[in-house]
Structures are given as C-alpha cells and as structure tokens.
Amino acid sequence: PSSEPDGQLNMVLKQPYGVVGCIVPWNYPILLLAWKIAPALAAGNTVVIKPAEDTPLSCMRFVQILREAGLPPGWCQALVTSDLAAAEALVTDLRVAFFSFIGSARVGWMLRSKLAPGTRCALEHGGAAPVVVLQGQRTMSSAESLALMLAQCPQATTMGDRTAGSSGNPRMVELGNGIVVNQPRWNTCALTT
Image 1 (cartoon, rainbow, N blue to C red):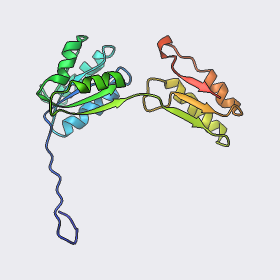
Image 2 (cartoon, rainbow, N blue to C red):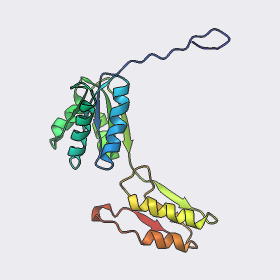
Image 3 (tube, one colour):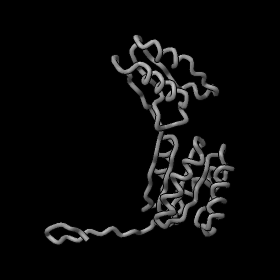
Image 4 (cartoon, one colour):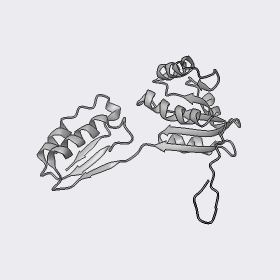
C-alpha cells in the first residue's frame, strides 16, 4: 500500500523468469558465480551456469555446496564443456528465459544476437577503463591506488587498466613501473606520464 494522498496503490509482484542461463569468465570464479547464482535463486529461478574452461572445479564445487546446503537438485546446474555448440545452446534454447554474461564485448554481443525470441539478457563487458591522476592530488594515496589497480589488471574489470598522470609524481611512476605482469598476454596495462 502507498501513503500517496490520492489513494494510489503501488505493488511489487515477484515473478521468476524461469530458467536463467549464465556464462562467467575465469577471474574471481567463486565471486562471479555467487553474483550470478544467488540473485537468480533468490528470485525463484533455476540456473544453468557455464564457467570458463580454466575454472570448472570452482563451479562444480560451488554447485555441490549449494546442494549440501539443501538446494534441490536441478535448481542449479553446471554446464562444464569446451564444446562451443553446447555453450551456444544455453543462449538459443527456448527454455532459457534470461541470459546473463560476463566477458568480452565481442563474445557477449555475438551471443546476444543468437538469443531465442523473448529472452531477456544482461551483458557485462570489460574494456578500456582509464584513470587520470591530476596534479595536486595526494601523492601517496594516488600512487598506492595506482599500484593496486595495475597489479590486478586486467583481471578486475571494475578497476582501471591504464593511467595518465603528472610526471611530477615520482612515487606514482616508481610504483607503476615496478609492477611485474606474469603472463605475456596480460601486458595490456599501461602507465603514461
């Protein structure tokens, strides 16, 4: 009920979508599984989730823990496959009412183009996330924030992946240049002054 003076009645009606299909990437596997599975289940939906090929055990264990906690079988299922056709079926199947994706824009938009008619979707893409450090900012907090940001690049899509700042901030340059990126394919982080 509403306390509006005109007597207007406002209501929220909870209606689950039905089956929610999810695809999550390799970074932060448990956290991203929880972000996708928990809200869907809380709203009364069932979930089919496809983890990245690099992190299937995290997903399988997460689903097992849900079952041990009392979630009925069938309410959350893991689709562990490297078969792209099987993964694509998660998007094209008419029984999937909502599709949720975290990953690259190229793959996300391609999958969205194949959605079954009427399927709703949520796409979360990483991308260019520049950070600008202006002159006059507190040097220490800016420098330490920069180091943390670049150290996680590009694993955390919510953090910046390139920084521009004043060359008059030697601590920022020192910390940024001291970061070691362990995987050659991850050398996408840049520090510019």
